[in-house]
Image (cartoon, rainbow, N blue to C red; front, side, top):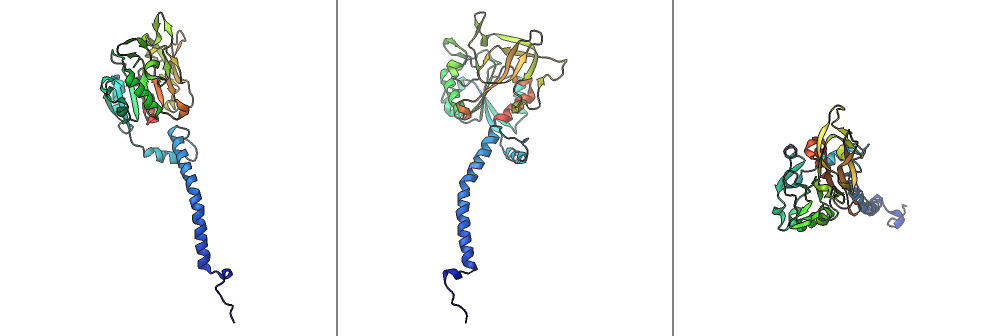
Length: 288
C-alpha cells in the first residue's frame, strides 16, 4: 500500500515553488530602497563631476546618461561681447538662451530666474554696471536653491542710487566668488581695469572646464591681451592670468559652491570668456 498524502512533510513541487516565489518577493522588496539610493548617488556623482565619461568601467554608462541630457535654459543679463554671443549661438545642443536687462527683471525676479538652469550676468559691454538689491538677493537665493551663475568682470558692482556701494557682497551676499575689498590708489580694485598682454594658466589640475588645456595661448611665442581686475578670490581658483614681464598674477576663473556643495555653482570670469572658446563651451556643458 502507498502511504497517505496531504501532510506538511509531503508538500509537492507546486508548494515549494509558491514558497520560493514568496521568499524571493520579500528579498526583492528589501533591495528596492538600496537600488534607489544607488541611482541617486550615481546621478549626484555625474552632476558634480565626481565621475565622468573618462572614469574607468562606468564611463560608458556616463556617456549614455549624458547623451540623454537636453540643452540647458540660460538667461543672459546685460550685454556680452560678440565673441560670447557667437559661442552661445554655435552650441544649441548645449544651451538655449535669451537675453534681458537688469531692469527687465525688477518685477518678480525670483520667479523669473527660477525658469533657467544657468544665469549669466555679463554687463561688460555696457557702461551701466548696476543691479538692484532686490535682483541681487534673488540671484543669491537662486544659487542657494541649486541654480548656476556665471559673472563676468565688473558686472553688477554698483547699485542704483546707492553711490556708497561698490562691489558684490552688499548686493549678492556670498553668491559671487570674488571680492572687491581692497583699495589701490584710492579706488576699489573692481573699478580699475588692467590690460595684460600675457597668458592664462591652469591652476586646478582636475577641473572639468579646463580638461586638456594647460595654458592659453598654447603657442609659447603667442600672448593674449586680457582686460582684467585685481580682485580677491573667495572661492576655488581654477585659472590665473600672468604678466610675463612683471610676473604679477590676477585671478582668471574662480568657482564657489556654498552650503556644503548642496547649492548651485557660481563661476567668475575675470576676462572676456569669449576669448577662450573651448573653456566657455566646457563651462556651459559643466553647468547644464
